[in-house]
Image (cartoon, rainbow over the protein chains, first blue to last red):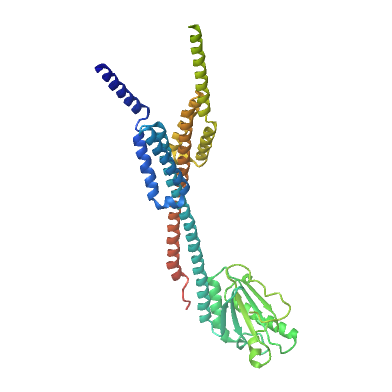
Length: 279
Length: 136
C-alpha cells in the first residue's frame, strides 16, 4: 500500500516533468499571444487598416485558448496556435504601419506639388507686377498681359498724321521699354503697326510698316540686339474699333509693342483672314 | 494453445495495420503547407527582408528547413507545425520589410519637403528685393 503511493507520486512527478519538457513555457507563449493580440486590438489603426490579419490573429488565439482548455495549459497544439496568433498580430501591426507610411508618402507628394505650384504662381504674379510697374512708368501707353506676351499700345499722338517719324514725347516710354528689355535679355519684342481705314490699303500698309520700323529702330538704337526685335505693318487690319467716327478711328491708329513671355517666340495673330478685334 | 497464439499474432497484425492506416489518414506529409511556406519566404525575399527583417526571415528559413527534415522522416505533424510557423514568420518578415522601406521613404520625403519649403521661402524673401529695382 505504502509502496503503491510512492510509485504513484514518482510517476506523477515524472509525468509533470515530462510535460514541462515537451512544451517549455506554453503558458508563457499563450500569455505572449494574448498580449500581442490585445496590443493590436487597442491600436485603432490596426483595426481600421489590417482587419483581416487582426481577425486571423483572434481566431488563432481562440484556437490556442480552446486547445489549452481541452488539453491543459501545457498543450503543444495550444503553444503552436499561440505562436501563430502572436506572429499574426505583429503582421497586422506591420501592415498598418506600411499603409500609414504609404498614405504619408501620398500626402507628401501632394504637398510637394502644392509648394511647386504656389512657387510658380508667385513667379507669375511677379511677372504681372512687372507688367504693372512697366505700365506705370510708361507715358502715353497702355500695357496688358496676354497669351502672346506683354502688349504695350502706343497711341498715334506720338506720330504726325501720315508720317512715320516718332515725336519727342515717345522718348521716355521707349527708354523704359529698352531698360525693361535690358533687364530681361531673354525676352523678344515684336512691333506691330496699324492704321484706320481712311486712305488706300497700300498706303496704310506702308505707313503701318514704317511706323513699326521707326519704333523698332528707336529700340535698337537704345542698345537692344536687332535679333530680338521684329517689326510688322498690318495696315487697317485688326481694328480696335469700328472706324465709324473720329474717336474710334484714333483707337485704330496705333503701334503695339509685344514683349514675349520668357524666351519663346511670340505667337502670330489669330490666322483669320477677316480683320477683327482681337479679344 | 497454438490456435490462441496464432489468433494473438493475427490480432496484433490487424491492430498494427489499423494503426498505420489511421496514422496515414490523419497526418499525411503536409506538401501543401510546405509549398505555402516556401512561397511566403520567396515573397519576403523579394520584399528585401534579408536587409530589413533579417531576424524574421532567418527564423522562417530555419523552420522551413526543420519542416522539410521532419517531412523526410515522415513526422507529418511536426512538419505541418514547422511549415505553418515558417509561413507566419515569412509573412511577418515581408510586412516588416515593406513597412520599414515605406517609413524610410517617408523620412527622405520629409527631409526633401523641408528643403523645398526653405528654398521657396528664401527665394520669396530674396526674390522680392531682387526683382523690384525701381529704375530711375
